[in-house]
Length: 259
Image (cartoon, rainbow, N blue to C red):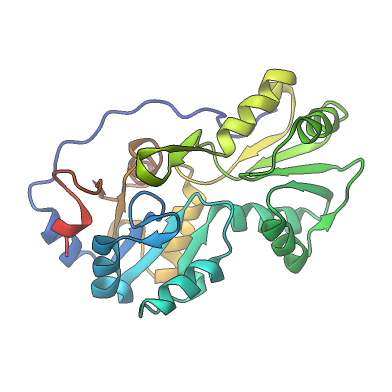
């Protein structure tokens, strides 16, 4: 019954573009990843901030984050002198909760208190017992008891929405942070997810890219994707025919070379 793949498939890393700076300058719009590309610990690094300031008018952020509200990023950027409307900040966790609100089912959100507050604001019908739907975000307080609750709800017929399939994302000082996909793997170790209605959102799946293009008023062929993850940023762009640049701070191609 799974509706989207539960695991990311390895992809070939694209060869370096011959004129990446020219691609940035000529694109009508830019889809920009957040964690690991522009920001670390949700604070833009020096090159990321310079890039945002230069191209803010044509940027939409597209991130698999499921711990932030769009307004959180907007406020961080505003404090640094970058104006970006929330409709141009497309986040997987927000998208998952919007979908849950649309479904109208009784729902348990496995996520931070901050994201459960967003769920309330969006009108998600949250319950603590016998849910018809589980929404799995990057729950930084995930415990054995939450795992037990979730797998028994799924075994009893609850549906599952997963914010993104990522196993990890870059943390501070070269560390790794467990992501939503790692929690999904824990669920999958206990219940057969192929027999459950599962929707996995976020990159590389198309909806967030399409939403960001719509916020910019552009077609996919008119925008450029910039990100640091070939499995999500680059592969998702490829599926929609969006040209893409793979960047990494301090590497041969970083945002500092694109400003």
